[in-house]
Length: 91
Image 1 (cartoon, rainbow, N blue to C red):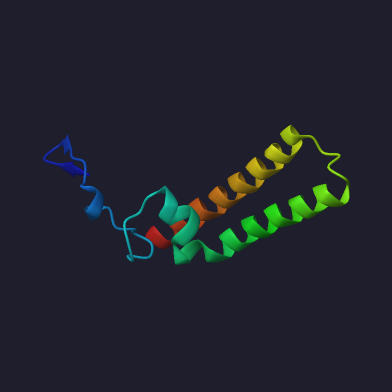
Image 2 (image 1 turned 180 degrees about the horizontal axis):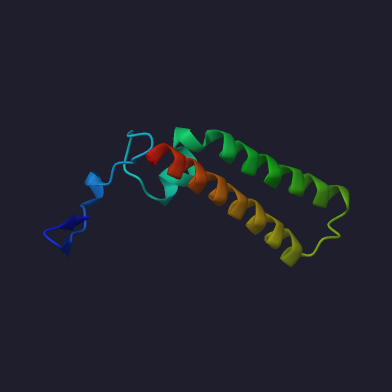
């Protein structure tokens, strides 16, 4: 936030989510709580669950690094969807 040309930091309790206006916007709120991202979050958690089931079905044939990479890809897709939606809401 800028005031008279100076960058000012808001206190934590003043950083209310500009998308849902329900609570302080922090990482936990965006990733786990914000109602605006509920569908994208469900898709992410569904993808993670499917990946875990597939790994179990294949007898754990995927390496730990491969499973981690799949989780990271799912998380990045969630973040892309979330940022796109946030931009639409705030415009």
